[in-house]
Length: 125
Image 1 (cartoon, rainbow, N blue to C red):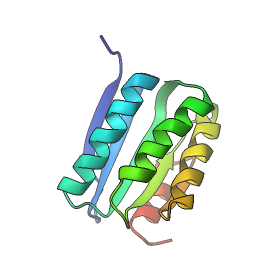
Image 2 (tube, helix red, strand yellow; image 1 turned 30 degrees about the vertical axis):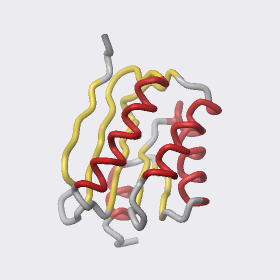
Image 3 (tube, one colour; image 1 turned 60 degrees about the vertical axis):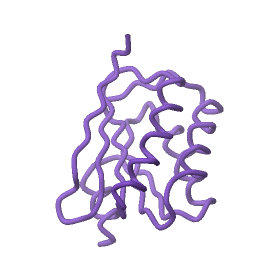
Image 4 (cartoon, helix red, strand yellow; image 1 turned 30 degrees about the horizontal axis):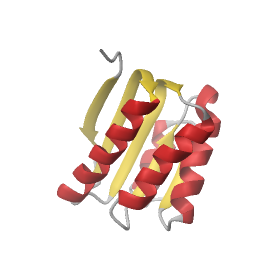
């Protein structure tokens, strides 16, 4: 059984979803959750996404996380603005994800705090 909690909320003032991961996140869970999240973003016609990993311990190598980033890059609806909020210990994962998404044409950036990510996703920065 997984010890990962996934909290889903809306971002005030935007048509954006906030996904907060709490606990240990394993690579197999990440692959499945990435696909489901892309499907949800399309179904709900969202413009933005914040992935908040500050309280998440990633159980992935950077190479494995690159595979997860590829799922997002290939399946996320076009035009979605993506803010990735990281903890210091997963900065390299954040950089990997946002570089992969930016290369695929998404407005994507990594942030060390939620407020800056929210400003970015709302298109205010």
